[in-house]
Image (cartoon, rainbow, N blue to C red; front, side, top):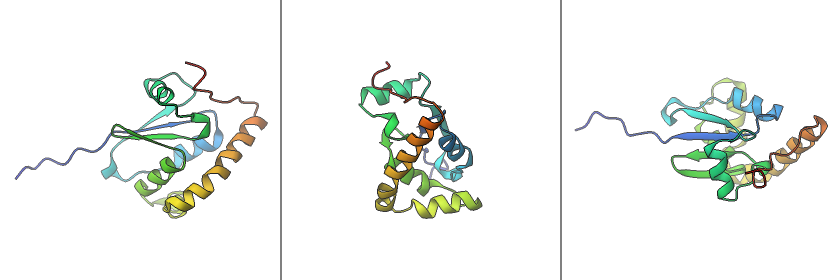
Length: 135
């Protein structure tokens, strides 16, 4: 019998580094140790992940993207998956885990979160990520 642990998938989160709400979410998010390490990438910076998402036609202005292993999920699905991987420790993580544990509820709420982000960025004078046009 092998004593090796099963390998954990590589996790990469591409998010808007100029959005204060997105930055705060990333700062406060705590994932269970058994899910592995999460690599964070600012969607506004050039990166292999950004290029890969652009080639797949994934619009980063419409939501964050999470790579689990070799598979990308986007928007509400990414938020839902992060909620499922949350430690549930601390008030923020417990709230996120409960609120976004349901994929249907997350899908209903995500457009409101996206609109709020767009309004906030406009108020702050920050433009779109526009990853499909800036290659």
